[in-house]
Structure formats: structure tokens, C-alpha cells
Length: 321
Image 1 (cartoon, rainbow, N blue to C red):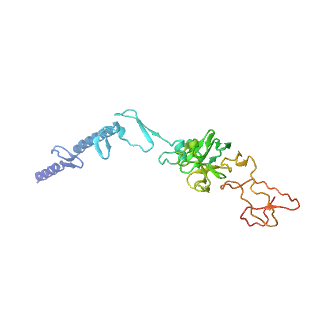
Image 2: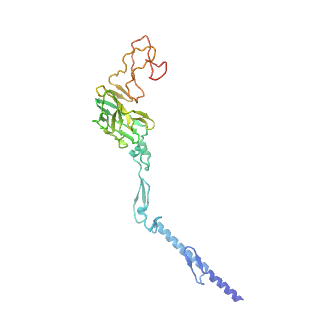
Image 3: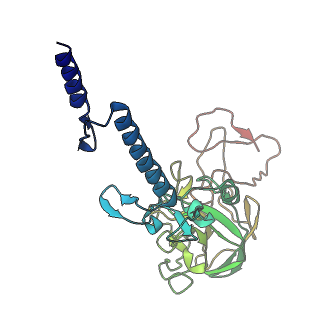
């Protein structure tokens, strides 16, 4: 009976001496191998493999370049960076340092507003404060019958960005002048001076060919809240206007700040007998987009008072002359 029990225990020991380990397959041990020894051997093997893998990862060898590339290789140029970023590798094929460089938008790109991927730095934004409603009005100077000078200035041209010029620009009106697309001068017409949208390539410095003049019969300038300025029927931004004489020559003016005054007076209304009711008189000679005018009125009857009001208003008193 005792022998039977011993044999049974030995058989059980032999059975448990055959162990299975997941991940590596089946490993068999003889009856002289104990469970303790088997575990120790397996633990040492697994730790050795783990440390080897960690060392390989640290050194960079044995690493797959991407999820779809199973070949072992160095990362090197395989690392992708986002739009507007570049990288510099200083030690290909070994431990290395990678530098990521930022490519911010330039001042011109910031002003144009068309760059969709590059960041804008505070310094660039500060230098390019050109909003839709911004402008730096130039000084407009009469030169002769078909030539004017446009002093340094800048405007935001909707769809193009901030455009400017830092010196005087001599602009010759008419199709034979600075811009072949300009209208030829005609008698007694307003000619609108504008930024030529089709000629301007983008944000930046303009030249004389980027300006255009149009006959009042061909365009209708009006203020656009969306575009932030006075624009013609096209995308051309109106910045000034010149009036011609009956001989198709530009009438001389003097310009300062936001006021333009004729060099010689222009009489819009000759003497007229006006009684005790408001009477329409001739329209003032000002550009259609003007919102105010400086007018001189005279009366030769000191015994009575005279009043005026803006045409179309219904006020009964008006303003005293």
C-alpha cells in the first residue's frame, strides 16, 4: 500500500513537470526539473528579452518606421511634420537631435489674409495692422490739365489686402496715361481716381499703373460697409475725383487733410429772386460720394433774412445764411 502511494505522488510530480507558457509555445521539462526551477528559467529568459527590446528602442534599431512599413530602419527622414514646419537632422543613422522650425506668415501674407495654414506672430500682426476699414489718406496735388500727384499713403483693398506707396506717384489720366484701362478725359465730367483691382497683384507696394480713372458716366461709386470704403461697380476702390472743364481739362484744386477747395470759385447758382418759400436751385459741384461741402452764399438784401436747407428735407426753418 505504501509503494502505491509513492508511485502516485511521483507520477503527479512528473505530470506537473510539463508546463505550458503562453506567447512562446510549449516547453517540456524532464522529471528531474522542478516547478520552481522552470519558473526561474522562464523568468530569466523573459527579462533578458525585455531588456534587449528596451535597449533596441532606446538606440533606435529594430524599430518599424511606420504602421504600414514592417521593414526595420532608422526614422531619419520618415518623420512627418505639419504644414509650415521643417525639421533638421544632425546625426542620421544614430542617436540624433531633431529641430522643428516654424514658418510664420510674412507681413504681406498677413495683410493679404489669404494664407490659411501659417501662424501669425504678434510682432507681424503689430506691423501689419491693416483692417478692412483702415487707410492713410495721401495728399492729392494738381499738376496740369491731365496729370495729378498722389502723395504717400495706403488703403485696404478688399480682396487684395493692405496696399501702400511710400513716395509721390505721378498719375497721368486717360487711356494714354499711366493705366491703359483708364477712360479718356471728356468735357465737364467727374473722373474718379481709384485703386485698380485687376492691376493690383496683391498686398504690398503700388505703382502708377495700379491706379485708374473712370468717367462718372461709366461707374457709380458708393460706400460699401462690407468692403469698408467707397467702391465702384467693380472692386476698384475710389480714393479721389477730379472735375474737367468744358475743354476736357482738369480743374485746379487745393487739398489739405479731408478738404478739397477749388483754386478759383465755381458758381453753382447765379443770382435768383427767392421769396418766402424754399426753391430748388442748381446742384452743388461735388463728387457723388461726398458727404459734406463748404458753400459760400451771398445776399444783396439786408432788410430780410435768408435760409437754406438740404434738398429733399421737409424742415420748415432750415439754416440762416
